[in-house]
Image (cartoon, rainbow over all chains, first blue to last red; front, side):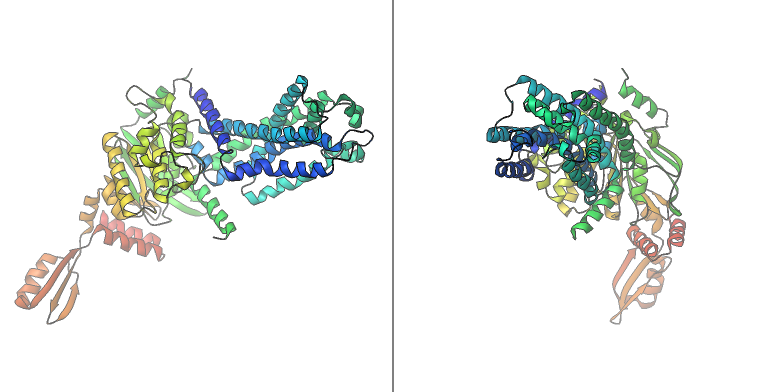
Length: 284
Length: 321
């Protein structure tokens, strides 16, 4: 059989195994529960507030927004972090020593991270819908929208996350990724309608994927009338596809180049050197 | 569809049966020459030990051969292919065990062996079925009882054996082992040596291992290469090397309750004529000790580490050749 096909299959299997592992260890389970839990608790206390200009619950509005945010978070931060970590412990070098192993590794990561973000979508959406109501979960069209926004969102962010993970070499430098993303979340209309911000800030928010995945998810689960608080009074699906599509295209062009360059440099001694640095960091 | 197996094979037959050919290999980092003129060959089924003090360039050499590092100059052929241009079919015929790996901690032993083995199945040939089954592998490296264990829960020695198992999962024609027994207890070391013998005898695997342990090199290798000062300064079987080294033996004896030590050029003649000829019955506790390869090697390493790199290597070269 064709070695490329074999590697892709082995990669899919690999992704499945690693996804399953996230359900059987405490750290990963905690990561699944902690942020959504915290968010749901905060939203519960804010449940009396409504979206400005409507009588719709602000808490209910933020549920799909946060789902959109989670996608970007998984695609960017999680992919970058995993890449940095697995470069440090030698997983990537192992893949490099295996025929078509890098292909299998990447396929595996795509399966694993997509699966993990699907889980985090569910952990927010289901309890959120039960707690606050108002979300249109019964509408099959809603789930279709969720699906394409999820796929396009991951496609727009995972390659960029891989590029970031290749450029930074230590987990501490991940802060350079994390902090700007926090800032972006604040101005991307996740927790409050973007239309209340100054126009120039709205423009910045609209450059990045978080705003669009959030908007896409709101369009899936909120009543049509809520579109009135969005920019242009519309869910702007066409623009969503456009902006996320551009990010995906840029990422898919950049990622193979950067990944290949990074992989070429991996060798036993680079892994050893990085491990030594990590041990110094930990103060061993 | 391409035929990966044939693509990899045809290249091998170009060479004259040599699995590794290295000519005038040089490696330079900035202004430092790590490898000056490394030359050696490995034939099919041979076990080669690359021996040398820390920092001699063993790992650099092996990484160049593995295709993980670009060389500065020289000719290198591994299985008939330049490692800098080795494709995936070439990669499938090579096994790599690096110094220390901590990857896949959440995986189970059998699970990982099975998954990594899958990549090799397209490279199977009628004469050489790839990969090894996971069950077969864990048995070969003595991890049967740990096949279901999480990798992060393995002990250091078990983890190392797993690394070896992964290195051979694709039934490689050539296996690289970088410091394979570092951190092993004597028992694990012995089992590992048995495994290496089995691989080279039964599977006809060519093995290149690095070590700084002369004893290990002597036990495992058909041929020992000593790397110092950036080039191979000795190349031969352990026997041949130690024979050529044993020029000066040390003679110790006691006379009148006093202990004496001397290193004559001809120990046999010295003992017969000088000692017994002169003192006869007065001599007791006689000891004649040949300088072993280890003595010579230790001297080399000591000189090397005290900073006389070039001269130490030259001296050693003169003695050995």
